[in-house]
Length: 77
Image 1 (cartoon, helix red, strand yellow):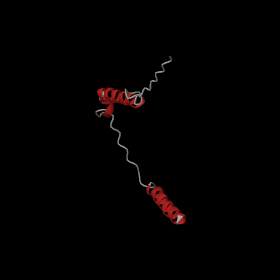
Image 2 (spheres, rainbow, N blue to C red):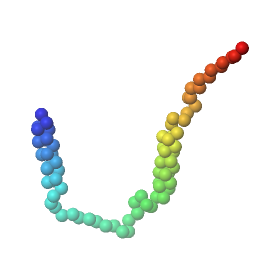
Image 3 (cartoon, rainbow, N blue to C red):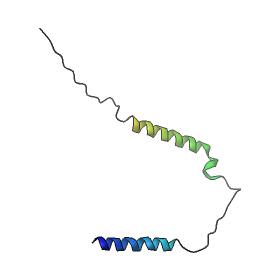
Image 4 (tube, rainbow, N blue to C red):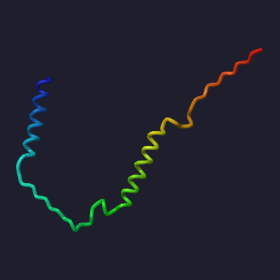
């Protein structure tokens, strides 16, 4: 069974490698465009805020108010 899996996997990988070969590459460089994501600095600010909030939520997840405190009272007579 392992040989069949290996055969299928190697055929798939070789097909992927052959699919990447050939053809010409046409690259269109537009320097006078709108700038893409760099034209929206507010997007970077919002993304940074969301990232920081996610970090805080993930790192402080175990420090909630649901702690269990066990107290023992020993009375000596």
